[in-house]
Image 1 (cartoon, chains in turn purple, brown, red):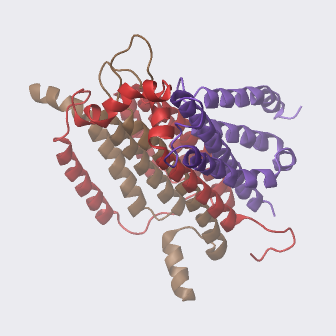
Image 2 (cartoon, each protein chain N blue to C red):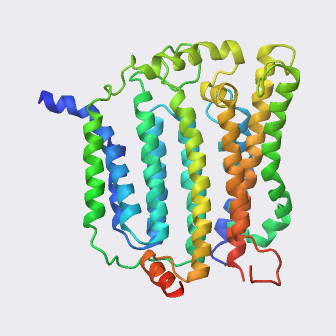
Image 3 (cartoon, chains in turn purple, red, yellow):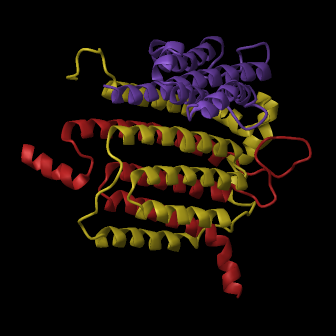
Length: 139
Length: 122
Length: 173
């Protein structure tokens, strides 16, 4: 029996719960500790754990480097887009007050979109940096 | 004894300053580049501690509005330090990438050997 | 504060230990202790970020770098007299500065009374979000978060430019 069977089986149990926890942290950032940065890092940690246990090539088949590298500017674009939407509908850049029918709902919508943008950028950057470091080592 | 009681609340500021100067010492005195970056991140985290300590109110709660709690610790330093942590890890990633390239170009990551080899080349 | 004393002990270990792999593991322990101290200081968002970023991503990246370079440090040749003097002098000046700080845990410092108190009072009414840190981060100080996202983006682009291999065949770049 190979020595890493325990690690493989245990990791296969852990990985969906880690993703679920990242989603929980992202969506409950309004009501408890959390938000975009933490959720992005936990999602990236899930992919990195999969790469450490199962090898880099299966991970690159599952989450291709093109997808990861295009996630990096996509989050910044989402953030800038919410700002421009505030500019178009209301009075100031990044003012979320007029995005929905009243101010409280507009603010909540704006915050949710902004946190989603931050999640995408942070997750993409961390996975892209890990892919770059791991790929440099293989000849 | 009253002087000890006066100095005891300052204990955590002094530990913070000890962490800060040891991070500074590692950056200045050690020659290995990876250890310098570890010292730099040590310095940065001690600065976060220095920012967060005055924000705590004894008997307060974390700044999440809930029923039944009146006194909250100050939320402004938390926001600044959140940004600072993420910027710190971005700097660390770039620094480590530079170290890998330096190692490929010169063959070493010790500062003294780097200066010798750079003088030989130039 | 027992945790802070533990952190000081870990820091002494980081200074003295020469095996870089052990230094990386010690710095991961240090990040976990720092996250615990932050929870004691009521900073829960910051503690979660520091635990995940400092003890997770930092350690992985440093281990990756050690894999690509070497794993132990050579003996330093210069005497550490001047750096030690500079560090201790800075420490003495900072300790002199701490005597002017307000006592730990007081509630009437300017930090708690000016803008912070207005954020605590108005956040639920204006934005409907109970977590003050998220509402300040994303709505009241949204520009700073935009700048921070741009910094992460720039760091990712920088690392990709420095280290990415373009094609399998060419190894000159």
